[in-house]
Image (cartoon, rainbow, N blue to C red; front, side):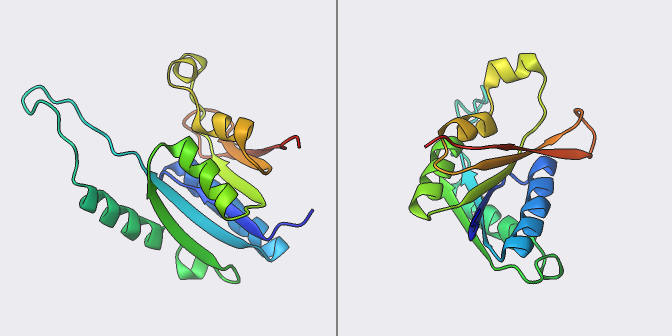
Amino acid sequence: MNVSRILVPTDFSSPSREATDYALGLARAFGAKVSLLHVIEDPIIAIPALVGYAPDAAALEAFSETALENWVLPEDSQGVSIDRHWEHGHPVARVLDFAKRHDVDLIVMGTHGRSPVTHALIGSVAEKVVRKAPCPVLTVRPKTVGEHVFEPSVAGVEG
């Protein structure tokens, strides 16, 4: 298996942190480059008194840039080349598009370990990426909801 480019989508959550750490270890082992990607979903928040409020795009972009710069500290990235990206859009579509545009060899992403009911209602970004990705996807998921102990699992893509 040749892995030279690893994509790590992040929403800055604890599962994303664990996936990032796992990806850094893989990048060191394979001599691969890591691309961090944060997707800004452009939310519209319904607040009755405000009749809908859209956060300032520039503020969301500035937050994303700062958070990405601080997501992996220099002492944690020893020996790994990292580039950082943010994009506007739907997380699944942006992750899949980024993977295709940048010839990504492996996507490493966290899952939130939601309950079956929550999962059925809102779905899973990771699950949709696994189903449609142009490359293998390694998901890092919590063993149980609320714990910070993670167990990786791998899903390949059929050609």
